[in-house]
Amino acid sequence: MGSANFDEMFNEAQKAIDQLEPRTVFEVKSLFKGTAWSNLERGEKISFGVFFSKKYQSGALPPIEKIERGKNNHTRYRRL
Image 1 (tube, rainbow, N blue to C red):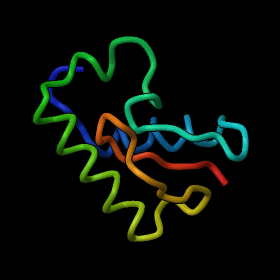
Image 2 (cartoon, rainbow, N blue to C red):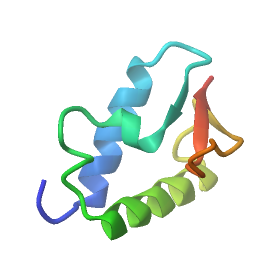
Image 3 (cartoon, rainbow, N blue to C red):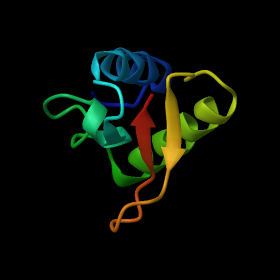
Image 4 (spheres, rainbow, N blue to C red):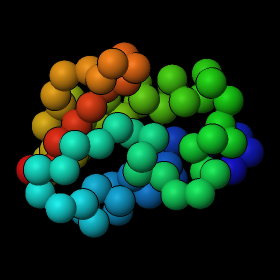
């Protein structure tokens, strides 16, 4: 993916969320197929996680809820 385009990534994440079954628990990284996530630099992953969280807080992602952090300290969400 090279340089991260957060708006494009956010659109991809929204499409992936729409495909999830209700009550599915997920982390942001699981919304990306193939190597799209693993090709990002660590700082880009963290920055996108913050970007995603801010979008969630602004109400841009109504069909999910934020739940507890996992053992890996990654924020987890649930599809409603």
